Amino acid sequence: MSSAQQAGEMGARRITNTWLIDHDGQTLHGDFILNADGSYASSNGDEDVLEIIDGTDRLITRSFQNWHTHLAMILNRGMGEGLPLMEWLESAIFPVETRLNPKLIEIGTRAAAAEMIATGTTFACDMYFHTGTIGQTLAETGLRATLCGPITDGLTPNFAPGSGDALRHMENLITGPSPRPERIEYGIGTHSVYVCDEEILLNGSELAKKTGATLHIHTSETRKEVADCHAATGMYPVEYLDSLDYFTDGTTVCAHCGWLTKREMRILAGHDAHAVHCPTSNQKLACGGTMSYPAMKDAAVDVRLGTDGSASNNSLDMRAEAKNASLIQKHDHWNARVLDPIATWQLATKESKDWVTWDLDDIRMRPVGKNGRRLLANVLYSGGRVMDVFVDGEALRRNGKTLTVDERAAGEALDEAVIDYYADL
Image 1 (cartoon, rainbow, N blue to C red):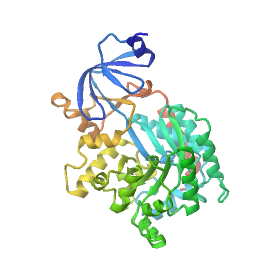
Image 2 (cartoon, one colour; image 1 turned 180 degrees about the vertical axis):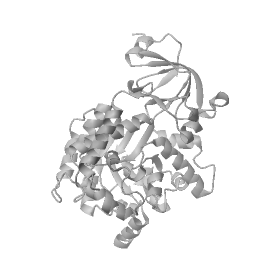
Image 3 (cartoon, rainbow, N blue to C red; image 1 turned 180 degrees about the horizontal axis):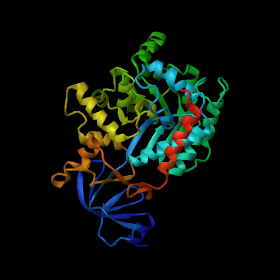
Image 4 (cartoon, rainbow, N blue to C red; image 1 turned 60 degrees about the horizontal axis):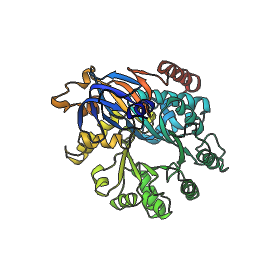
């Protein structure tokens, strides 16, 4: 088989006369072949491809990766605005979550997927209830995800407290067939040290170690969480988790990490844990502190970026999250050089295998600048319209229209669900 035939069978596309930005943040111009395996090459013009796209008014980039979400919490978007954290949880969030069922989760997940695709994100690391339903729904949309089901007694509405059913359910999902194995996998969600007792933390860690699954936890999100943990154990949260042998090397996701000591940062680095910066959520909930990116990098911690759920962010748009991350780090450290466009880009797209194209006719993407030098900053700080999204060579969105989710239907279903189930809240 010739290389041209191979390109066509792999779902390759030729995009002509266009701009391209890969992980390195450098801007290239020319004709490019985008291969289904995520690689790209300059085009000779004679390859056998699925289609040829005129890229004159497009910018090709890697897709965003959202490393901490509660996707179906899009059902709670706009609820309890302006309330302090605990009042917000007790009056707006917890009452809603007791009413969750698979249908609501499906509706919320589908709407969240539509938002991610429309804003250029192809991966989410999620933690939410009815995890199997989330997996089935996302498989239909074509997105990638690691779905970490909560095993927390008393907060998991679909399982009886103390039954152990949540843990057994997640083990069945992890070891059973995925609805789309190349894109959807399952993991363990141990909510936090203030919700999970030692037994639950250890049970989750043991299962993750046994199966090689991702282990997902909220870590040092608030000052109160940190103070309470220290008062109860004599240790800060990451120290406490380490004392339990909780961490799974290379596969633990720690969301927030806003109140860490340098010793804790070194612990995370030693376990090759992923620390997820969620600046918008931290600010909206008035946590009073966000991750110190320079200190984390000095400690060699692997930092990722996430939105948190739409309830505490109002958005799953990673462009806005990347901008916010860059600005708050510059502001907090009095240093305009922290998280420059290239470093911010690499934080927001790390490990992406997929491609997005942006509309250069959108005024927010202009001016392009000499040799396209302004394009990266435009995407990160100004926004722009997503034209195409390609995952494994599959088009999830083409010419500004999402193909795998009916956006209007998803939005209408979301409205109806909120009115039917939450009208009194």
